[in-house]
Image 1: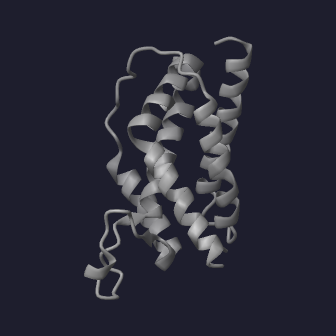
Image 2: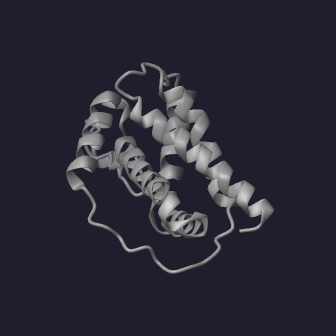
Image 3: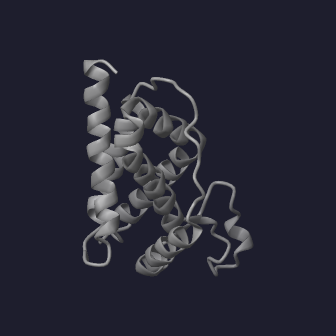
Length: 165
């Protein structure tokens, strides 16, 4: 990476650390949705500005599904009714007012983003910035980018409906 790319990458690393710290502090922080609302657009801008240096795939280690489920469960419980939201392909008329057919989950979005970013942060020293930049770019395009957009959209909806704590 050259100067400007290195600086952009380091900004993304800083934002990724901020995001992971916010999620890690969740049990202690009462006001976390407002900071999250401000942080996600920064994360989005940082990852989009990143130039993928290319490279090979980093071999996936076995995902700790228990750890993922534990975080998801914690987030889901903390969010309560603020967790689920309608996705564009959901059919609200089928729900008969019960809201049970909403398929979007902010807890799921945040869990996937967290583990993608955490993995890159953990690999940074061993694999180097080019490999992590490539990992995040590919992961963003294939998977967690959609989670990020959905989370931003849902938090925006909560904010305009004055449900953001």
